[in-house]
Image (tube, rainbow, N blue to C red; front, side, top):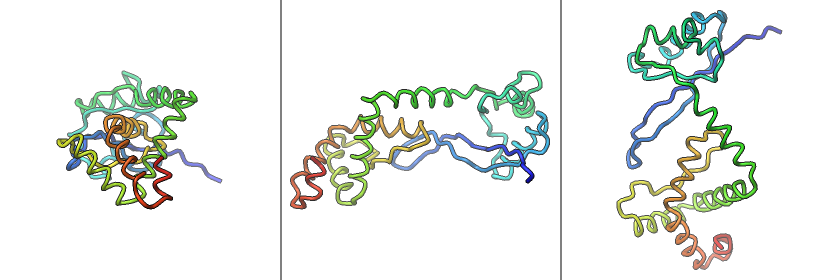
Length: 197
């Protein structure tokens, strides 16, 4: 059985989401087969993958990877070769990888794991019904009339940047979330009102 080496290509960019403002997004754009494993060969695969995704390479503002020496070598590494052709695409070490490791380790602490589990349950419970989401929106509007975000987002299992954003929003909107659960507890539907407790 022949095995082929592939590189995964992801892009990180700033997205202007209507009503939510600017957010940093990271999207997977595909796997690219790598036949030539030299730095120039890997560079060619990366550039071709970005071009196939119809990205304007003049807009590149940075580059990062998982830290392989072939990628980050400052003279002949792939990152240096890309920077030569696209000077604004400066190489930065992947802080997100270290950040992910720190957050993953923190989630092994019982108290942190438990609070994230409780948040996940509350988010899932409220998001499961449009009526509950509308109640949350009303509570947010009462407490924070200028708030542009009124929807809870699921906790991402893999993207820690998005998970961090969800936790931050949950923290900022704790009072409206708490109030929403209080309103739901007063509903006649005992199934849902008991879950809100």
